[in-house]
Image (cartoon, rainbow, N blue to C red; front, side):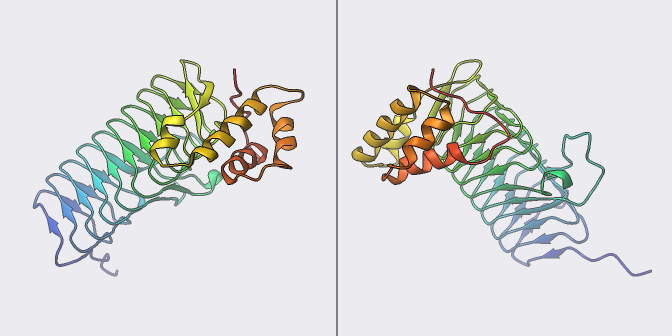
Length: 271
């Protein structure tokens, strides 16, 4: 019987004696693994990744360079899906993410595409949860105890407030913001502002647009398109279909194309 593969640990990595790094794991240069951490046999840690004390990384999980995983976070455990039967699925996390205390990020499922993916420069605050097969963009912030159901698609620069929940299969477009203690059950347009216990679309994320230095003329175009979507004949998608034929502004086109794309959910529409 052949011996199990040894862990591949870069000589510059620092691993506390109480940590468990299972055979087969690959630990990149400059990694720091703190006391009582557990690293599974199919885990790959990029350069400069830090696992603070008691962090758990398991499953077929890849973590990008300079990401920090804080105490008691659990990254790469099996999905919270009763249909999961132990199939080999993945979790891929990009660079420079901050995964704070008690956060949980799950593997994908075979039925959902087999991979949960997180981009770069995200912040998952205390107790945040990323469900199976979710696709999370870059620079996303999930505040304390916010949760994504399975199969969600979250665009770049989205902010999800504390204690908020996003229903499975929901898409949230780039630059949208979800207020605290909000339940999101339907898709959210790019740059949208959603708030209230049962998540209503309450305008555009104007503060976020200004913080990202979006030009005033682009903001004006988005506001005009939003007003047109909020009223008029036909369904929300029909209004978007009429607007896109004449839309020249790239931000407006992005919003309208998002509305007209295929989705498993309906939309939060202007109140």
